[in-house]
Length: 132
Image (cartoon, rainbow, N blue to C red; front, top):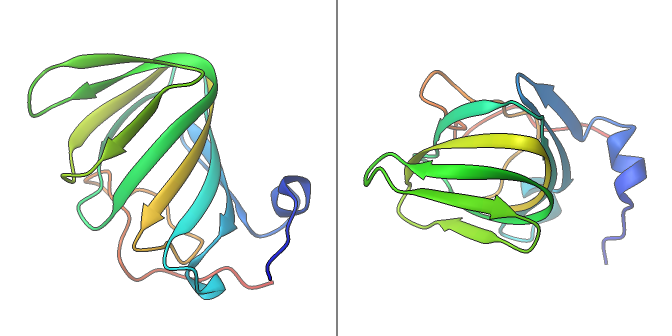
């Protein structure tokens, strides 16, 4: 059984901060669950072009307000508390935060822990693991 608190993880190596966002990785590849689970904050005003070429992701908005633009179709979808979106086709997109957004994110395959976005807006398949 794995038991962790968000506050423990936020104060340790599982918290990753980057431009426009931060992510606390509660479950990682090393936990052996087959997916990773993160609580991610998208900072107000962030405009993040992303393209998860190596991962599928589902995202549930806990709080805040923003939008996601599907660059394949040009369609823009509003995001608010209670909204889920799933990037089931490795969708190229732009995530924008009008107000700071708190998101619960699941990645498959799981992240190792220290990933940040590369130049294409993706996470690499192999990355440095979090050491605890």
